[in-house]
Image (cartoon, rainbow, N blue to C red):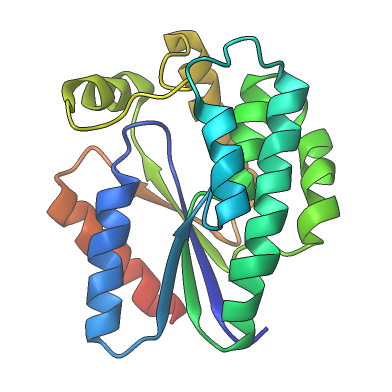
Length: 207
């Protein structure tokens, strides 16, 4: 695969969506061929699975089902969107990827990081991002942003306990240490303009 695969990770309310849009616009202005996408989602089938996962009506969903649905959505998205774009030499910027599953289901849901990694490897092989931007925002700060933003749709995971989101955050910190070769941490408590500029400077070294 000749292209570059860049993923963005962070807890709820980290501001990934706004940062990705600004970074994409900058890279396009610099002449890069960019594909932006998201998980869960990015294709019709994957978006349908996303609706099931995030619906506030599905509170009875168990952790194993949740992990398997994410993996299924990821496999469809990966083969339908990510692989073809990389083979064309494009730069793929993805809002969340496998690290979300490792932090949320593997660590916070207590399924095991290695176990969830194996579930996903069935669908994506050994392909990991070239670089992962982790926007570091403490859970209480991120959740306040979520619930202060009246224009944002609150989903099932947003409604989890603060303790759950604290575990997700700790899971991400473990992953940042485990995958030092590709994880880069950006301080997400700064204003969005600063976060965007910090991210652009990081990506310049990779591109």
